Image 1 (cartoon, one colour):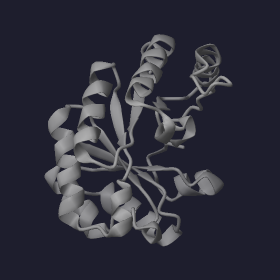
Image 2 (image 1 turned 60 degrees about the horizontal axis):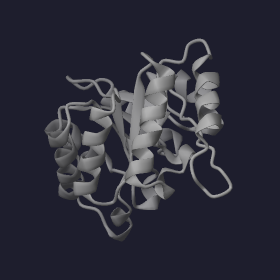
Image 3 (image 1 turned 180 degrees about the vertical axis):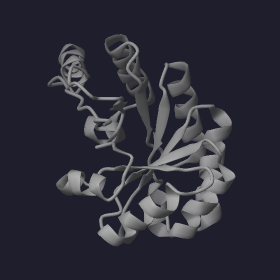
Length: 206
């Protein structure tokens, strides 16, 4: 169970560090939580600068201690994604959650996704979690693309599955978790988390 935390702000839109620390302690106090995700959608990562994202990770590491941290990597370009990945590793993150590039809205080819993830993997030794969007958004990865990514990027260890439909979600569970090098499926279907776990997900990141 890996919750994504929120990020409070002051009136001037600076980070409210005091409230954020209290929130981290509150979430981490829940029995059974196995990791915390920082710099995801829930903490408005798209509106945070590089330095703000680094500060979020610093505060999180200070408050969470030995609890593993998954750090979101939100960037359209591979070079910036790799820079963020290096920062996350240096800051003590345990894994990376890679958001899809918005460029995919204009079209996506398998080699684009593979190259993006390879560049990130070359920048860090941290395990990678792929954020799988619904295919209808243009930002989700088709089955064959996912398999190519997994084959060519050994540090890819899990997907955060937001496929949005049950047959595709179940296909991910059956296919990815039974590969010679299994890739865990972590559900983020917030309206049906428990049902998703019943289908066989190995966890949730939501």
